[in-house]
Image 1 (cartoon, rainbow, N blue to C red):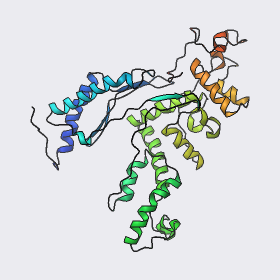
Image 2: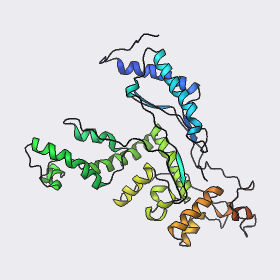
Image 3: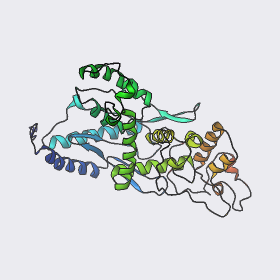
Image 4: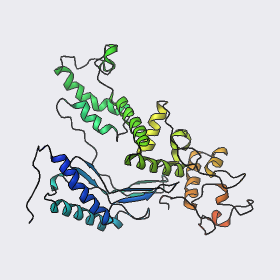
Length: 347
């Protein structure tokens, strides 16, 4: 058995030592082919990720080789990745703590009644722990990923304020508008958690996209996937939520889109456009919307479009543009049309 050779708890050199050690283990994982990789939906740029590290915490990622792979298909490779990571930690003098190690399987199933993909498994719900006096700071750590409604934040803050206000010498029933108001307006200066959440979302979108970080690359990939999914000539944040939200999968970006539109906040991103193929061509989704089909019909028409991997009218018509091809009428893909895009899983 290899003896532990850690640098010791509280050692100031611990973080840089972990950076050096983890870098070698990550390169080992890359060499063995573990991790996640995909092409962005429209411009086919490669997006890769092996793990996410923060100080001494690491999230190791393993994904299927294609969109058609299910959770069961990758169980063996997930076990191999976990064993490889644990082996790398052991070889460098450390060890995995089972009590602090967790795993999540994320997969989707098609719901034919709702016409959308849903999570196959529901893991433990996120629980907020309020440690002592650092309540707001603890909540802020979570806000980037959370997309809670304002009313939900009020419910979360209610028991916190019930306890904390009396300890500060303030009546526990003090008007909440004053509690959450800025000091310059004679409030208590406690930031409204919903406002802080929105600020975190905007900061994440702008900072990572501008600085071209890894997170920015993941956001760009998700934005392109949504644009291909909605089939319009604009990025998702430039679209009207009430018109095309029904076409988009339920993701963090979709929820932030709804949040920003409800607050009349406009965020623009430069994304590759879905080009037309010839004079007189048009995007299918925009044709459907011009015909004013209802939301249910629009959703199912869009699923047919995605199954056929078609964006424009020219993708489903004959060469002279006069007739829709028989294969499109029958809902069958053929070898005539070859899409240049990376399409999601369809049924």
